[in-house]
Length: 585
Image 1: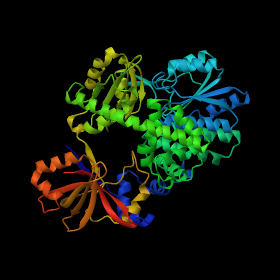
Image 2: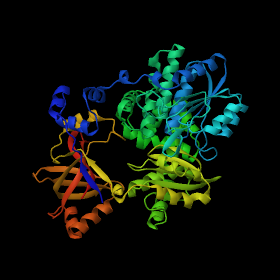
Image 3: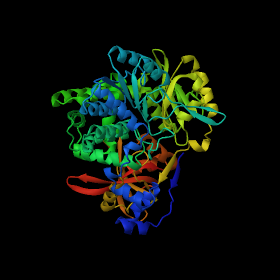
Image 4: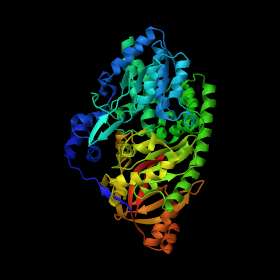
């Protein structure tokens, strides 16, 4: 079941169109994305780096840079401790390169996912102390590491935190008490008393902002920090941040620069995936390049990924990139097997009702988040996947709209040895004996109803399938970059006839269709979803014979309603409009 909902928000679309020289359709699409008012529209369409917020507004940014500057003046050793995902790798890269540019003695440590777990821990702190490190700078982690940072302070280490995760808190009688570690400075826009006007930055964007302040303090031209924009863009998309407000600007500017990147590692990764640097989009960050970076942290060590971006020799960078692509192919196979196991567990009905807690002890712990995401997509339920690790259970969760996973976990904190995350994603560690109790309580706390579990397909405009033109599609590209919080425009039409359907592709997994609208316009479409489900659905709704006629190109009784995305299809130098079918009924 799906609920198809046409977004119906009002505004003077014709007036907006005249004022900004766009079509009323584009004006409507922006209003659907809550872009309201002349200033917001102008920033959305034409925002530049000049529209970014002042990094000095970040609480403790100046204090952190003051302490970092003192460490440089004293010749102290600095260590950056990051994380093993895209955001952590990019954050670590930005801080290391930036501090070195300012003359600092800096190295890095990225935790091993299996041996160390997420973020800073006592083992890494003890290692830093033994190595003579005086200052630890965290990135993409540290906000919840209260005991670990207390340990570092007891050893006399200065700790500077840059992070973007939720601030830990204790709630009693409806009152939240936010917790703060003993760190010497904490830069995180989510802090309640932070004046920064946008709190949805990724860890790499926070690191970038800190380096802007630091470069200014060190007398280095601010323009030099722009070299990090491609890394910030990569991390923003890879960490699935909302592409709203200044995140849109950061990603758009990063994509512009990556086409001419001077980073040997970035270029090697792009070419190793057979992509054209001049034609990259946010999609490639999220679904092609990003998984290669994450695969290194999942199956081996994320240090490979960081070394890729630090490498200046092109042949060496190409070798590292090839290894990352190979690891990602291995990850795909292992993920496929894990998803099958998870679906079997769901079908057996032993994982919970409203919130799925799936215990897969033999699945590689690094794949828990991906598998949870796939299950969430299939069943539209908040999903945790738990796996067995060396010291108990580790798990990752992926949420649905309206369910703040981190806040719900706070009500079950007694079962965790460690946890943290966002409204839409979280990680945890626990003892195996607590799995069943956690499953019971997280479900008892859940306030979602059956209605909440019906997927909602939000349609921008009910638009005849024959209406989109090449000119309109090109105009809609002004809305890019697309991603979370700024979805690609979706349209819908009904009473569509199938003139012909046929399956193509090396793996026979793509459906091509010639369709005819109720206005007798012929249109061409493609569908990339489950073809067996497609055939089964229309066989049940009409008959198998009607489906067979459609695939033979014969007249048939099938009438489709579709949700679609129009795109430009180029073939042998000729451009035409093609619809990508996203949903059907």
